[in-house]
Image (cartoon, rainbow, N blue to C red; front, top):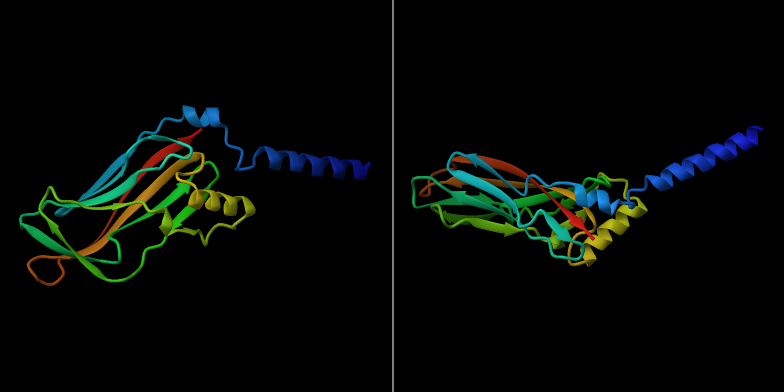
Amino acid sequence: MKNCFLLFALLLNLFIAGCSSPENINSNELKKLEMKKTTDQTIEDDFIFRLVSEKAEYQEGEEVNLYGEILYIGKKDEVIIHHSASVISFSAREEIRGYDIDYAVSEIGASTTLKKLGYPYRSGYDKGSVIKSPFDDNTEDYEKFIEELLEGDGFPLGYYTVKGIADFSAETEGDAEKGAYKMEATIEFKVVD
């Protein structure tokens, strides 16, 4: 009797694990999800940081167009900002599977001149900068997901949130640093079949 109970418990656990596998995304339920925030912006002092997904819904295999941009809206004609290799970095999460998609940014120091409103600094999301999350258990499913992400033209089927961070310091007319900025914005999109 005890062996039957153990066998039943083992089969039940395998059944539950199989049904809740993060790779089993219900495509019909995914299509019903409404994406509410494909654009977000933050304003701080003389700067606007904007994060944009050109669409709320992409088809599996379709290129996903995401970008962040910084606009200078101050009184001067231009301002110099100092930053790492890129002013803008991205982190993404596939919410149904719970997978984090980290983004590497080189710490190389650089400077960019921003002209007054109308000439934004723009940086697009680059899948070539994606790295495996050091915080995930890096399960076999996660490894397959990252491989599919990096090898395909678009993103795998799923519901994604993306956080963009603009991290820089600013100076005006060669003066000492005016201040450090770490501006954040978050958007969402989904990929359906």
